[in-house]
Image (cartoon, rainbow, N blue to C red; front, side, top):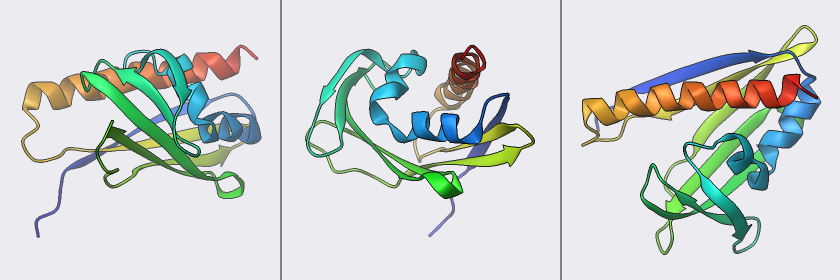
Length: 138
């Protein structure tokens, strides 16, 4: 089996590790700062899932987060309604002085056109800046 290309984006946030970790662990807060990927109010799904519209995917999606707060490890699961979750999107937090570095790894799946991949990376950079602003204002 061939490997898939990945890209890890990073942002440094001048806010406590625990604050950012709690926020990332709560699936309901992602649409508040992930405004390009999610649109509208999330609603409760099954268990710890939320359901929200994703303009990027062009449909409503199920979304959940598995988190290890102490270690800053988050696995994000996303799937269109009625479909199974695929492999997780890994997010990691690293202590950086009084702040935190967020490492967000994206996978380029087969068939993703160059333009869509590049646009997705640029969009995720903006989303990470939203996350930074959200926490540095507190």
